[in-house]
Length: 244
Ligand SMILES: C[S@@+](CC[C@H](N)C(=O)[O-])C[C@H]1O[C@@H](n2cnc3c(N)ncnc32)[C@H](O)[C@@H]1O
Image 1 (cartoon, rainbow, N blue to C red):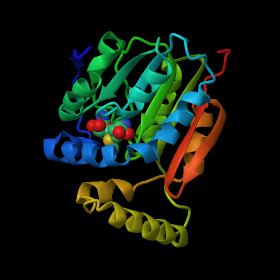
Image 2 (image 1 turned 120 degrees about the vertical axis):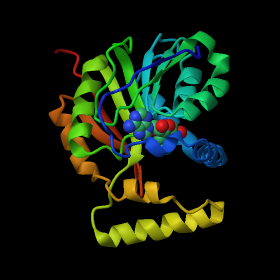
Image 3 (image 1 turned 90 degrees about the horizontal axis):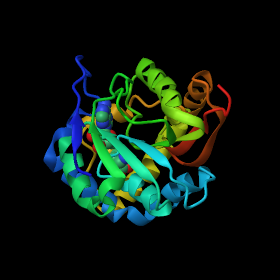
C-alpha cells in the first residue's frame, strides 16, 4: 500500500532528519546502501531471529525512520504473514520505498511523520510485535530519545521487542580515533563520498551504548542488551514485559 497519512507536528525540530528531504542525498544514500546490502544483511537477519517467533506468525512490525524500507523488507520476507508500518519524514525516501516495496502490496503502509521530538502519531494501528529501527534515531537529543523509548514501549504488545541498529558514541578519544581511522579506510576502499556537514554534525552528538541501555531500562524494557556491535555500530534493544 503506498498511501501515506501525512502528519505535521507543530514545532521546530531543528535539523533532526531534515537533510533527508533532499532527493539527491536520498539517491546517494540508497546507492551506497545497495552497494553494502550484503554487509548489512547479517544484522537485519539477526534482528528477525531475536523476535523468537515462528516464520508463519502474523506479526505487526513498526519501522522508525524506515527510509526506503531496507530492514522492513527483510522482516516481510522472513515472516510472510507479517505486515509493517513504516514511519519516515522524507517524501523522497518514501517515494523510493514505494517502488521497492510494491511487491508487498497491502502488507505495508508508510506514515509520513517527524519524530524529532520523540513523539509518535496516535493512529499507527498498534500494538506491534516488534518496533525496529536502523540508522535513524541516533541524532535525537536526549529528552526526545527518552520520550521515544517510552512511546515505543507503549505501542509494543506484551513480549514485543524493540531493536535498534544504530550508531553509538565511542567511549573515549582513543577509541574514537581508532574507529574513525578504520571506518575512513573502509569508506576509501568502497569509494564512498565524504560525509556531508549535516551528517558530521549528527554524528558528533552520539550517545554511548551504556546510556541507551540505561534509558531503555528506565522506559520499562526488560532483557535489555547489546546483541551485536562493531566499532560505532551497535544492535541493541529490549522486550516489553509480558505483564503490565
Ligand atoms: C540513514 S537513513 C536510514 C534508512 C533505513 N532505516 C536504512 O537503514 O536503510 C535515516 C532515515 O531516518 C529518517 N529520519 C531521520 N530523522 C527523522 C525524523 N526526525 N523524523 C522522521 N524521519 C526521520 C530519514 O528520513 C531517513 O529515511
